[in-house]
Image (cartoon, rainbow, N blue to C red; front, side, top):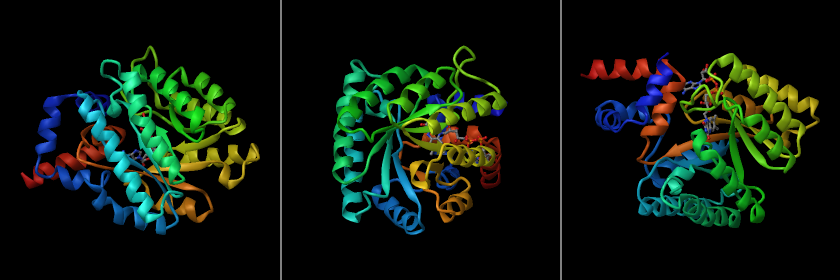
Length: 308
Ligand SMILES: Cc1cc2nc3c(=O)[nH]c(=O)nc-3n(C[C@H](O)[C@H](O)[C@H](O)COP(=O)(O)OP(=O)(O)OC[C@H]3O[C@@H](n4cnc5c(N)ncnc54)[C@H](O)[C@@H]3O)c2cc1C
């Protein structure tokens, strides 16, 4: 019951101000967003890659309201690419972007987001890596898929995310699998109405398996974005049945969640990519992590009370 309430709060400016200012927030936030700047994050990137993991980096931020903020988002990603180039980590570290941070919701936002994300995709390709377009709420997805298709004309490795909770996703998965795309499949993290999305966990899990089968049997590169142990073993079984080798799909999990499992899968020879977020505009990302596991919220509230 708590999840939808937390997701509603993730869109409230009042809650944003309250939670961002709370004295204990930072230590709880650090578990999921372990740095604010590129300098903060470099030691973490080095440690994780040295441990056999690959990464996808997210500069946190979304739902911007002014074009200058979109340009700043682009520049933050370009600075990250420069840093990865210096570290010679282009092969091991890709990037995840949210198009709402690149201006998608502003006037003329579709073109603006495409114009802002293209230089990031070009810079990524120049150092041997790529970009994955995150999936946000369902109203943004037609634009996201159109931008993805456009970028793939020049940069076929550009990836995108699909969400198992949406009714539309089985059809999206068939199209993407047939076109040979890199696709990350996740359950879905936003508050979506019953007209467009499954609401029950068991329905979402069943849809996840159906969609994953389509991706595994298709021409593309499936990226399994989940911490769910049951889905991870089903994914291994589906990959085996589809005759995929270990480098023909990958697992992805979020930084701060089931870190032992990241290492276990990598030690088994799987490609394991850790989604690692950093930056100052962490509120929306953090609240979605709280909503996924209400025990995180109880821990947060207990820390506030004990410090208060
Ligand atoms: C790499 C990656 C990228 C993602 N990108 C997107 C995206 O672009 N768009 C989008 O809508 N969603 C995205 N998500 C989030 C996703 O939609 C789910 O909300 C999230 O992954 C939780 O679902 P789950 O598959 O882990 O299964 P769940 O059933 O939610 O969780 C399985 C188990 O994992 C652990 N766990 C899960 N979440 C948490 C948490 N927050 N804190 C502590 N433990 C936890 C718990 O042990 C839980 O029992 C992404 C997830 C991953 C892993």
